[in-house]
Image 1 (cartoon, rainbow, N blue to C red):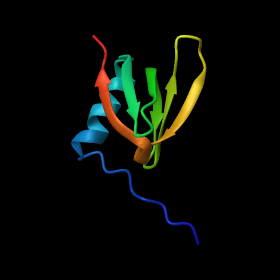
Image 2: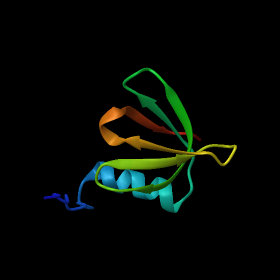
Image 3: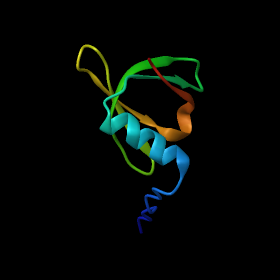
Image 4: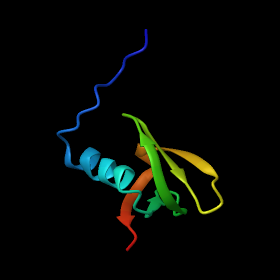
Length: 73
């Protein structure tokens, strides 16, 4: 049996990522491994975000692996 977690748009973290998506703002994602991914967020679901880099390559990252998200200005 698969459990689907509701997407709670009242959470500030969910809203922040939605703003990055809607405004196509590039961001830096530091992962718990120390890796850094920079790009635009294409989508998010309750578990993952998809980031597209300057070469149009998409990376899907589990939210649990993210240490921080920093919008690039």
